[in-house]
Length: 169
Length: 320
Image (cartoon, rainbow over all chains, first blue to last red; front, side, top):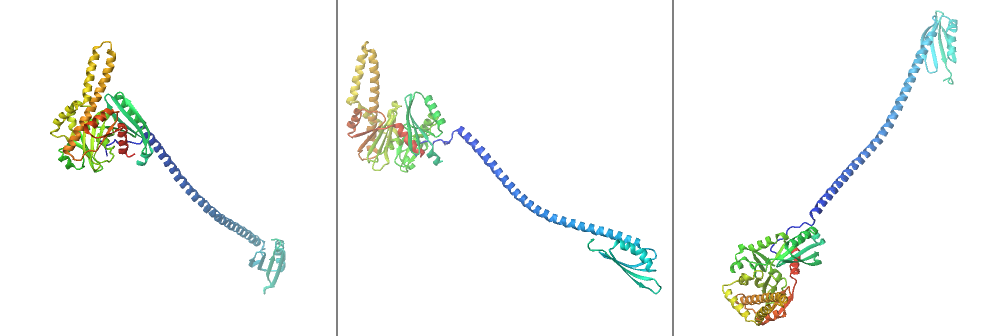
């Protein structure tokens, strides 16, 4: 320390340089901030994309499951329709069958199966049966077999077994 | 900041006022290495002020330094304030600089503030005492006297066994009318005025002074001759300069004698063995011979660059 005075504090940069530096630093800070903002956004977008991709995979799995369910339901529906149609057909068949039964003949039991129809009943005579009931049955079924059992009063119990051929189904 | 300072260029401008002219030296340094030195001269203060401002615009790291030319300063061989009290110096009115915890340099507060105010327009950073400049030439030889002579001042430092200045004195040539006061400086004593008068009388008896008187007579004779009037005017100017120079040299001889006398009487009994005459202007061999004849001591003249010395101190202070 040889000086009686202390030097004034001196800035390394001139005033105009300072302004430029502040401006450059501010712009740099803004650019860094903006790039950070973009990076953050990109990160979140990336994260969101990943999540969406996962959702897509999940949804695809759900769609497969739902398609399976839908197919099953459609199958069920088809089955139900089939059953309904069959029932309708059966109902119509029964109705038609009952329409076929002539007045002198009385039915006691009817067994309807997939390819066969077994009818139990009472007829005054075999001729009544053979003329009034047998022809329509023969026209519907491929094979018709009838068994008669005479009752005490002279009437006949009958058992009519009617079958359809397998090929026709 | 310090790392940056090592990388950037720093300007150091040292200046001294030489009558109306301002002499300056601009040094460009970086990391303790001087890159460029330029010596400049300015006709007026305004021109110098503009130069300083321009330098500041070019480089904010510009340090301006000068010396304080005042009689109210000195050196004390201690940093302890009690030493000042012993010497009868009121520490309330001075600013003290402790150098290496060994000795101190002081200056009067009034003079310091005045110098600061006078140089305010030059954006002054460092203000060095002539003693600090003189001390920078210390060769660490015992019993040595160093006298730094410039156009504005002459300062003396005497070192005894150690490298601590034992005695200091200063004379300013700006104020030659008050020379008696200046010669007393800080180490004044009641008997000094009488001694000074006696010394002046001694000097007047020197042959060289007689020669000057002869010259003055010659001038008068020449002036009577009208034909040689122009030549006479030139000669008169030359002689006037010579006279001023001789007067200056005599002042220094007187100052040196008084200082040594005071040193022997009041400070030490050790004989001064070496006298180093530090000067920043060409001195005549006649002048050296006068001192040698007067003091019976060999004078070792050393030409120095005062502005360079100031700048070197400023570089040291700035720790670049």
